[in-house]
Image (cartoon, rainbow, N blue to C red):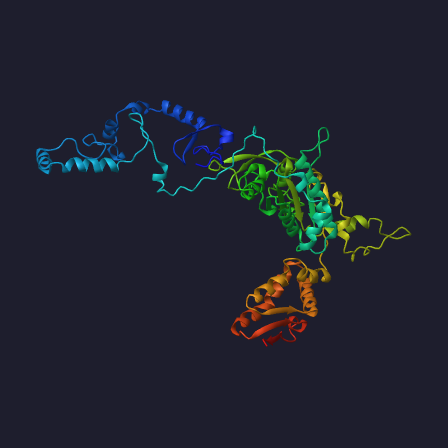
Length: 501
C-alpha cells in the first residue's frame, strides 16, 4: 500500500490527519478508533449482545437463512455425520476420499485466524467487487522539514512576467502590468513567509472587462508560466450553505483536485472566480438572496485567509465525502466579471456637475470614451451591488479594455498559438499552404465587432468560412496553396486556389 497518501475511515470518511490512527481491516478497509469505540458501545447496548460469544453452529441454528455453518457439516462443507451407505462407499474408495478432503481444504480461503464466534464482513463481496476507489489525500508531516514549493529565485520579475504574457496576450498593457506586479509580490510573500515583524497582507485582484477581452485567458497563462495549480470556478453556480447548488468551499475543492490532492501544493495556488458580477445584490427584492449577497458574505473568510474544511472529490459537504483542512492564507484569489452597465454608473458619477454655467459639463462628454472603465472606483463597485466587506478584500482593481479592430487583427496572427496558425498547421498536415491576406483579416475583425462578443467571435467566423475549404481540399491532392481574400469573407468571391507545380 502506498504510504504517500492518507488512510480514510470507511465509516465516518475522515482522513488520518483528522481522525488519528486507523485500524486496517484490509488493504481497502480502515476504521478509526472513534468509530470502533462507538460500534463496540452500540453492540454492548444491543439486546443481541449475548450472541457475540455463541458458537457459530448455534447461531446458524437460530438463523438458518443467514448462510451460517451447519452443525452437521464441517467448515470444509463435508458432512461429518454420514449414513452407513455413505461410509461403505467411502471405505470402498480407499485413499480417494482423503485426496478430496485435501482439495476441499485448499479451496478454503486463507486469511488471519479470528477468535471463536467472530465474523468479518467483506464489503467488497457484498458490492460485487465494484466499490469505487477511495479518494486519496497526500500525507502531511508537520515535523518534517520540506523544501518550499515556490522558491524566491524561481519567481520571475514583473518585467519578465509581462514579456512572457506579451507572447500570448495581445493588448491589455495596463492589465498585464498590474497582474505581473501583484502576482510577483504575492509569491514573494509566499516564498519568504512574510517578514519577522512586518506581515504582508494578501493582494487579491478584481478584474473588470467586457466579455471576450481575455480575463480568463490571462489568468490561465499566468498559472502556466508560474507552474502553480489553478482552479477556475463559476460564481453563478454558488449558493449559500444549505441550498441547492455548489457550496462556497467547492472553489477550494477544485483547487485541491488541480493540485492532485496535495494540500501543501494547493495552498500556494490560484483560484479564479469568474462571473463575480452575478453575485451583486438584487435591487428591490423581498426574498432571501441565496445566490447573491449571501455568497459574498460566505466568501469573506476565503479571501481573508482561514482554515477551511473542504470536501474532497465533491462540491458539497455530506457524510459520505472525506474532508480535509486547507488554509487559504497563501492562495491568490482573482475575481473577474464583465460588470455590464458599469459605464453608466461611472458616467453618472463623473457628470454630477452637468447643468448650466461655466463649471457645467456636457452629459455626453464620456459617451465615446473607450477608457471609461479605467476610471472605476470602489464606490462604483459598491453601487453596482457588491458589499463593502467583499470589495475591501480585493484591494487591486484591474480594468481591461474592450477590443477594437486593430487588436482583433493582431489576435488573429500575432500570439504563439494564434487562431490562423492553428488552421495553417491543420492544412500543413495535408501538405497545403494556407494564406490570409490583410483584407481578409480586416473583414473578419469587422464581423467580430458586430457580434459584440470580443475575441470569442473570431473562431466562429473563421470556422464558418473554412468549412468548405477543409472539406474540399482532401479530395484533390494537387492543391498546393489556398489564399483567403477579403472578397471571400464578404461573400463577393471565392478563395484563390493554386495547384502544385
